[in-house]
Amino acid sequence: MKLRTAFLVLVYVLLVLLLIPFLLLCMLVGTRAPLVAVGKWAMRLSRRILGIRLDVRGLENVDRGRPFIFMANHLSFLDGPLLFILIPHSVRVIIKKGVGRIPVVGLGMRFVGFLTVDRKGARKGKARIELAARMMRERSYSFLIFPEGTRSRDGRLGAFRRGGFFLALESGAPIVPVAIRGTYEMMPRGRWYVGKGRVRVDFLAPVSSEGTSVETMPDLMEKVRSAIAAGLEKGDA
Image 1 (cartoon, rainbow, N blue to C red):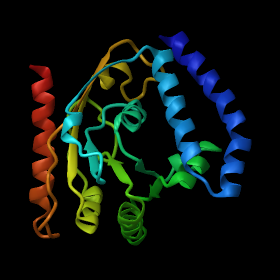
Image 2 (tube, rainbow, N blue to C red; image 1 turned 180 degrees about the vertical axis):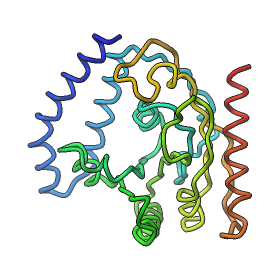
Image 3 (cartoon, one colour; image 1 turned 90 degrees about the vertical axis):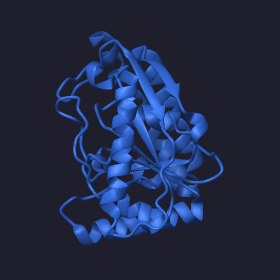
Image 4 (cartoon, rainbow, N blue to C red; image 1 turned 135 degrees about the horizontal axis):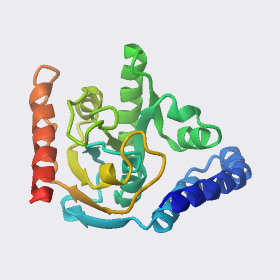
């Protein structure tokens, strides 16, 4: 699998070089959909090159006619790309500020509507949440968020941060908990290559955010975390 990963890196370098004029053209004419389509195609190609096997369940829980906030546990660098191609919506992601600085790729992500956030800037974080909620209302975007804030160091579900839940309060959108398993064993934090394995993704029943306030937000956080934890335990059975 080290050879496959190295080959994928080479393919990505070539794709990024080819993407530069395409990105500039999309920015010039102000169109985002073709760039998103190319990004999803590249991620599907990555999955085929790496031979990742997927077991996906629960998509019937997701109404394709309305935006959601998808919240998933975070085990590996693989989680974001896989969920981005599996979620049947026009989905955007709130990413770390450093990711948005990746040459060409970061520019493309920001152009299509991915939002960067700096954990140290509370005021800027609030502005990003308000912008994301406006994008959900005006463009019907859904958002993918990893509420743990970072990849797990030991494969276990960690504590949740509040940022994504502020988006639920601001937008009023339901939250779809997502339980993902298998990616930690394939590419744990600190490993540069992808190992063999099967990934299971469970899209769980939506959790309503209606009627939630800042004071009752911990209850909403616990509902979502408990749903993901139960989904992970069910997958282990």
